Image (tube, helix red, strand yellow):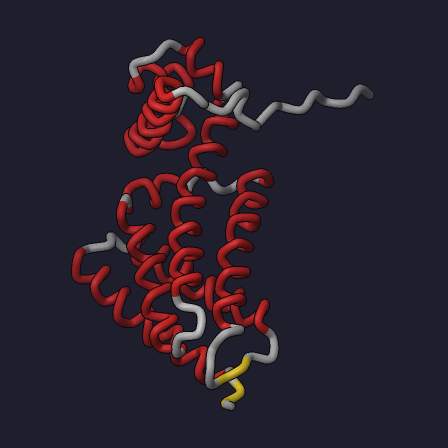
Length: 211
């Protein structure tokens, strides 16, 4: 039996010139809009190209197929969220736990809620092997940044920083997704910001070895 050909999922090329960058950004935004309008099953490259105002041929210069386009859009969104977390972690090295958590939770929630519609739309796409691998890869970046930050706490230590960071990031992601799926009203988002800080701070203080 012959081997099934692999479907290419990586973008064909990376935009370098300003015009190319604008084109790709338009394609991403169109992808998000079509996702919101019809969902991932009914999304097609033709619909995305029409919404972006480009030809299908132009879209295929960057994304060889629908799967590649959706995976790249998911990666763009996840990278934006995790980059915000990484920056907050770097800025809070050496701070008290309470200060660290407030800053990191704020960065995470702000990034997810900046385009809450996109966050929700992309949840429906993160179901395949490639997508789950991407979520894990990007999540590892956030956990590594948090572990590095927690290692600098001046008055406490953590016996297992990787696992502690895994639990912390999972709590942030799970609580935020629950609020998004429940409608993410302004009141719910306000409560999320406040209570997620309390949840994460309480968890860290309960597992820390006090100096």
